[in-house]
Length: 283
Image 1 (tube, rainbow, N blue to C red):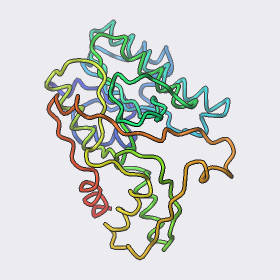
Image 2: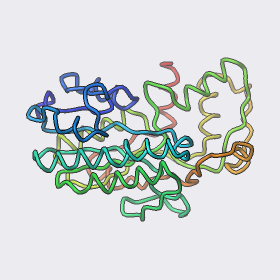
Image 3: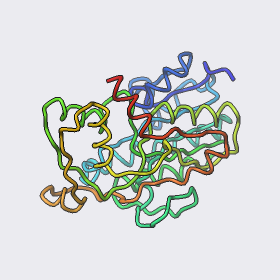
């Protein structure tokens, strides 16, 4: 497959950088090159050089999306933009791969979420992402990858906790949100598998493997990898943590994915705990 005919949208984010590393010949587009929220910008773009659209762009300011302005921005980037890309993909016979989130689920079910679990977004951000999922699936040649707790090259939870360790801070961390980290190299591996092997189109859940854990457990694993087990992590609930923070969006408590579909496609996601140790060592 000619990767020079790949278009990476959202090229400057954590996943976008990882995709550029994987596909150095691809066309990388940030908003200055292609504004996917703008109909005219999408129409004027030269699509004759593109076979595959990799949409890693998103508005992910979860709490700000609860404000009127933030809600508009979230819907433009997360719902309207995928609809624009799906329309172009259909008109030009392109493949569209769109990256989504665990937030499209409400996290109330006790088991891991399968791809056909009902969409039940809890917030403005989550609703916009669910709408984007639906929009992307309109075009025939589509892949929608739902992922969770992404860690890569950029600001993220792991780097925040490393920063706290450097300041000798023992944090209080939410312990009732359960999921798995998704490292961008794992996500890129899944994307490459689906695209290059021409896997059946549809929705795929993707995260690292291993036993799920809470954000508090992730923090303890980070401190252990740093050799800073002298720092303590105090568990709290989501409700208690955000009690004094008005305007906060609700979060799903269960973000665990059933990974059987992506595994059947040929990916064996590495344990997030093992991958975390290697990531921490590289920081």
